[in-house]
Every structure is written in structure tokens, then in C-alpha cells.
Amino acid sequence: MTEMNENPLDILPEVLLAASAVFGLLLGSWLPRARQWIVGLLAALACVGGIVAASVAAAEPALTAFGDAFAIDPVTSTSRIVVLSGTLLVLGVSFSPLQRDSRETEFYVLVQLTALGALMMAGTQDLLLLAAAYLLASIPAYTLAGFRKDGPGTEAALKYYVIGALLGVLMLTGITVLYATGRGTGYPMLAEAFRDAPKALIATGTIGLLAGLLFKAGGVPAHFWVPDAVQGSSPPVAALLTTIPKIGALAALFRLGAVPLADSPLPWAALIAVLAAVSMTLGNLAAFFQSDVKRLLAYSTISQVGYLLMPVAVVGRSDEAQQALLYYLAAYAVTNLGAFAVVCALPRAVNLDDYRGLARQRPLLALSLVICLLGLVGTPPTAVFLGKLEVFTAAVDGGYAWLAVLAAVNTVASLFYYLRWIVPAVSRGEGAALHHGDRTARTVAYTATAASLGLGLAGGPVLAVLTGALN
Image (cartoon, rainbow, N blue to C red; front, side):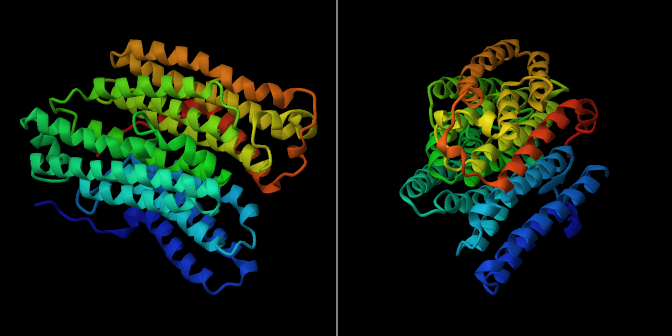
């Protein structure tokens, strides 16, 4: 019988986030509209406290909490720090647009609950807990997508919800099949049971499970919601949807490949490699001729999922897979949020031409945009450059050299549509949409840009702490 470890301190970051969300919701019902920002401050403090707690836990030996249901290991610790840091940045770009909004408290609470769901997905080692985490990361996000209650937002929320509900049912069906196959829901138990289980049942259950996790990650073939939901939602929500849930979903996929499916007869590596190749290629092709900046970044994030799936494909085949995934997750998060922070800083600049003359009017913001967009390509010395090197190395080491070559070709091709945004920004002219800006969002953009550069320059020490066995 598994010994139960029910120490709440083992999941302190998650506890802090949940407590802040509940207390903030109660507090917001009593605060006047002009003081609702206090709930946002409480959320930010919970994130800072969670980052500190996660950093302390990362220095300790790996362990499991509540039996084997939740693991505290390098994957969980890194995901905690990245998710909570990303949530801080999202809260930062949300502050000014939400001032004196009648539902300001609700927004902060929903952001925290979405982040909590991502944290639970990253650390879970039990299929039932994974299903609960999926719902927790999804339902608040549906509400956030339609938070503005306008036409585009309502359409975004509806498409997001319908696809999420459909793929969520497939995920629950897959979990049911895997439970029936392995006679349990814990990953260690399933790993033993899957060695001799019927291949057809494992394949059926895994495909259903992949449907839900690829939906949260925004990868092909569960990507259809991404462009419409991102374009229709507000810029802060778009930043959250393309970053926070993706981290938890990819960490969950990595853990599935490393533990329950490691010795199964299912061709996990080949399946994920194909999904990675299709995601990066389709995302790039669709982004080529987009003129709406949010829609361009939406397709960009689909292509980024392809690169992030590469280390998932070679888990167990390459010793570089874990640190490549974790480092790339951190690099992508700060760089993508930096680009979205620029969009948040210029709420009236919707299309690429609206950014014409940005370098002349707001040189620092233009510099941040250029660094973040070139960072998403993988230009040194940004963090994504080193992340892609690690990912390519892991793919080659794991026997998927063709995937690394395809990823390199896609990387070069992606430069085209990022340059379509950069060229107007550094060209002469004066866009009327540039006169109105958000000072807080500009600060967030500068911070995220500096983090992207700093993470790239400090890549060696950071990569060294991302090693360690899963629990």
C-alpha cells in the first residue's frame, strides 16, 4: 500500500495561488470599485511567494506528495517558476485596462485559477488529477476569452469553449480506456501494467489523452481555436492563453512519455515527432500573410509548439530532452509575453501598418519588439536561440535528425513574417495608433525583453540546474 504524504507545504505554491484566488474573490465583494486593484496586488504577492517556495523546493531532493499523485521534481519546480513568473507579467499588462472596471476582481481571480490548473497539470502523476487540472485550466480561460462581452470576445469564447468541450470529452474517454487497461490511474502503476497490455487499447486511450493536452498546448490537430480566440480576446488574455496553459500541458506530455508510456508498445516517439513537424510547419505557413498582430502571434505560437514537442518526442532517448524542454519553456514564455506586452502597450495598433514609425516615437518599445520577435526566431543572444540549440541537439541525439533539419528550415522561414512586422516598426512614418499607450505594459515589455536577454546570456548556469530524474 502506498504511503500517503499529505503535507500541504509540499504544494505550497499551489496552495498560495488557490488561497489568494478564494480570498481575493471574497475581498473584492467588499471593496469599492476604486480599490479593486488590491485583489490584483494580492494575486501578485501570491505569485511572488509561490516563486520563492518553488525555488526552495527545487533545491531539495525530488519527492512525491499525496502518495504518488503529485511529483515535486525539476519538471514541476521549473514549471512552477515559469508559470508564476508569466502570471505576474500577465497581471502587469492587465492593471491599467482594468482600472475601475466593475469586474476587475473577477479577472484577477480567473487568471489565478487558470495558472493553478497549469501548475497542477505540470506536476500530476495521476490521470484523475490530470483531468481535474485540465478542467481547472480550461473553464476560467473560457470566461477570460469572452471577458469583454463584445462581439469578437463572445465569438472567441464560444469557439474556444466548443472545441475545448469536445476535446475534453475525448480526453476523459481516453483516461477511461487507460484506466480499464492498466487497472489504475497512477503513472507508476500504469507503467508496469502497460508493458503487457493490448496495444490497441493503449493507442486508443493515448490518442484521447493527447487530444486534450494538445488542445491546451495549441498544437496540431487541436489548434483550430488559437487564431480566433487570440484575435477576439483582449491583448492581456491573448498573452495568457498562448503561454500559461501551454507550459502545464507540455510538462504533462513530457511526464506521460517519461513514466507510463516509456516501456509501452505504443510508438510514442514517432507519433509526437510527426505532430511536432506538422505543428511547426502549419503554424509558419499560416502566419506568412497575416496582417493582424494578434493573429500573427497566434499562428506563431502554434509553430512554437512544434519546437517544444521535439524534446517530448525523444524523452527516454536523449539525456538532453528534459533540460531542453524546460529551458525552452522558460525562454518561450518570457519572449512571447514580451511581444504581447508591446501589443498591450499600444492597444489601438491592430495591424502591422499601425506600427509604422514606432522606432521614431517610442524607440525603447520598438527595441523591445525587435528583440522579442527576433528572439522568437531564435536569434542570439536571446534565450530562444540557446533553447533551439538544445532542442535540436536533443532531437539529433534521440535519433530524429530529420526533425531537427525540418525545424531549422522552419526557423529560417519564420523570419519572413516576423520581418513583416519589424520593417514598418523601424520605418519612417507616424501611426496615429501610437500616440495612445499603456505605461505599465511598456514596463512589462522592457522587463520581459531584459529577461529574455538575461536568460540567454546565463544559459549555462540555468541549464545546469534543470537536470535531475523525474519521480
